[in-house]
Length: 350
Image 1: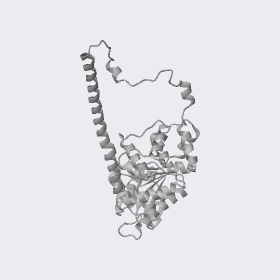
Image 2: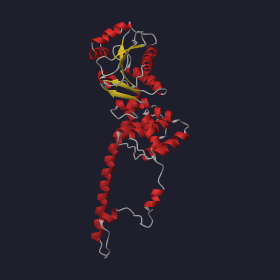
Image 3: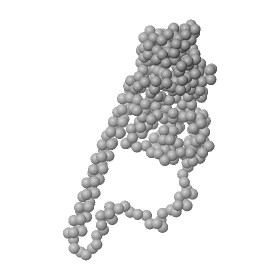
């Protein structure tokens, strides 16, 4: 199952388990930890005291008490400025939480961005570690995982990546949109000049010739009905469907179905629908996610999307961001979703 990035209060999410970013004493001292304790009730504090603390980089589990979740997984996050090897310890937090979730039969887990608040972890680094560890876990396991943030300020996309994507958008979305308006105005002027010239020709010459009207002057050549293919011929020579093209690419690239849908960050059940229905039409986000998984070139991606009835347009910010990543050979679905999230766009796959 996929990784989803969402804006929400983690105490109000209905999942099997939520992760509580705590400390080695498992006592609430502010931030998300305190919010979880308040929402769960007094029973949680007593349960945490009975656990006898938690080693930094490890995790322990309790009941969900008054929350919507069945379990709360508590992890002692590292202090970025004080801990030795803080990045390794943070990665260990995610790994141990996922281990406990799997051992307790959890099908869904919600994570905050551990240690990115009180413990001072740079958000960019915290996000990279979270998506890397969770991505590695999902490549071997089936679980619905949500990375929960309160707002964009608590989210840490790379400044370098953000700037690169923003620059690409400025060059290919804003400027092109303005050029489109200019081209439309130029066409309007050209049309006006052509009409005026036609009128001048018609009324200044008196040779008895009947000149074509304006619509005839501007119309494109037409194909004779006898030259056009019949509907039956067109239906007999239809292109491969989206589903057929997808599995052709999978075979050509030597991938398995599992590798494909996991790299695309889509659900196994959804992929099964595509596999079983030759005429299945996916959403645009799903189609692009599969193109990313297959690592198609931009030209191949455009042709692939046409099979599902979609197109990429530089008048659409979402499409421009997708073009940036494919054109630069970046096919990490989580990195692409981080950028889409930062620019308030729909995410791929999930």
